[in-house]
Length: 640
Image 1 (cartoon, rainbow, N blue to C red):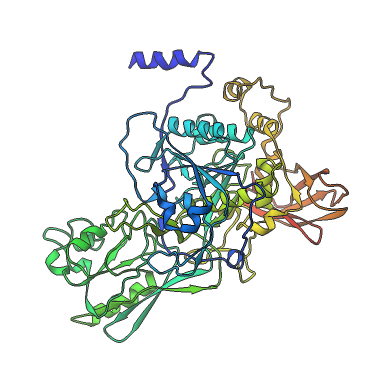
Image 2: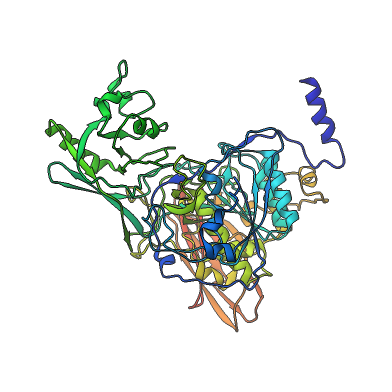
């Protein structure tokens, strides 16, 4: 052990070594299998935009790509190029291909393809956001885990290969200081090279759990779209139990194209306990908890559990599975028998029927697709939330995108059924959408910086659903805040021409880090350049970020921002403020008169608390409006 310590201590002193820290293990923001919807923001969007720069490259740091996968789509094979596939492996690890191995890359550049669907359920058209984009894929995940060393190596390779956008759906169970966070470090080097990095926020679903928190990373939450998959269970009492499958399945899905041609007996798993197993333990259908003789030839009703063993239920001879949600965690419904996931209300109706019949029977019908559902989008219950636990003056996540029930490529090696596609959910599905939209913006505006692209998406995002009301959260329709969705649900068309941009560069990032208390001697090894921190330091909340946050509002305070005009001809933008509770906001100047493309104008936002006492975060918004463009920034303030 002593020799190992001496080795890394010696290496730290070498001129060629930037920094040394322990290489920890990181995890994929694993997909949550579910059902797909299509938001009206996307449903009516043909967006068959041919790139002005067809050589634009998206770098994907993930779990790899299966050779020949694109050949299942002839048009995609003709038009999409896989430029590079690297396996990054800094130490001995076994090779595996789980389902996530192929889920993400094909989401991005797939051209319109007809009748491609998961088991004939999503039987319309599928679209990829970037028809002509190229992919460079860097496999760092092995068994859904990646070491710090592998992640940093992948970033180095992607930057060296000259990618334009980097997409990464990996994170940590515990957030780390940016100086020892490999994704933050790699993304910072990418940012300095003009490469935008989009990353998933995580799937923990609770406040203060959002990951990938650095302001030079575009952090993506997950929300639904307006397509649902409905399934029915025909009960023996001639009642039709209608089930709307929403974002209640976490790491699992109950989508099944399989239907029963007749009714079968139904048994609650709690009544089929194996010898020596309690009825409560048996109700979760975990491995070896059920008596095969009791469930053979029947439909089994199981409660959701983290270790739900669908394989055991199938192998024991059951003909169908009904799983009761909604809080499924880490389950995989890749079933070869008819299956369905139901919510609490449907479960109560089903159990009432089971109690009234000595020999209950049911028939699981196949899934049907319902379009244009309302309200949509909704925030996914599993999507990780802010506030930002590392630098709370920066609102995270930044934006939300479709991440519930996404049709995605799937490794045929993941299951014995050899499926090429699957319906999956997670912020790992939302992140590729944003990466692809960023690539489109980059293609249309090749000179734009990573922060400009980020600003374009954030300031044009919507916080309203398709009923014109604020976006709510699944499954109960609870209210949401910027800590759920950041600036809102991404609007790709509006993001192409945002009107105004909040831009910042590497020097601004240095000022920001200095403002958080990082010392020059800590930054110089990281950046490889001399660093001087300004005195007095610039407050972190004064980074020219598209959102506005103050984690410690004590008395009257002000923040400063600068906008860059990207429009044609003179125009006047007027500030409109959604006032947070307990504080008055004054914007100076209230009008910005732009005359020329690329012109910059600065403004100040004064915050004047008018309530006494301490409060939790309160939220509002600032929107600059010229009648054509609405440039919106969420505001979050914490009274102390």
